[in-house]
Length: 119
Image (cartoon, rainbow, N blue to C red):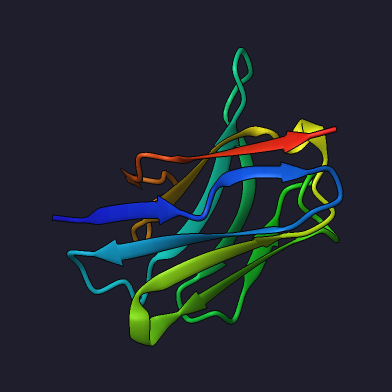
């Protein structure tokens, strides 16, 4: 059974940094794509960043470009999202997700971690 557990959220001032972590278990993820999404109250879920588990390709949403960095540690089955220069509009619940090889949808989701950026 695939399990994704996020951690690292919290309250930070505008301009600050946070690193989110996602611990993945229950499967061999070597060919998966791992993603980070976020959802703020009253808004649709938004793509933030994704990475091939091999680490050779990364993808970013417009809101994450130049500020966020996604990375993975294959040995530890961990995916990270380093967030710098945080803004109040980055406030949201951040979710880790996994997409199986050949699939266009993210099938597995974590429970989310809250990020709050104060102005």
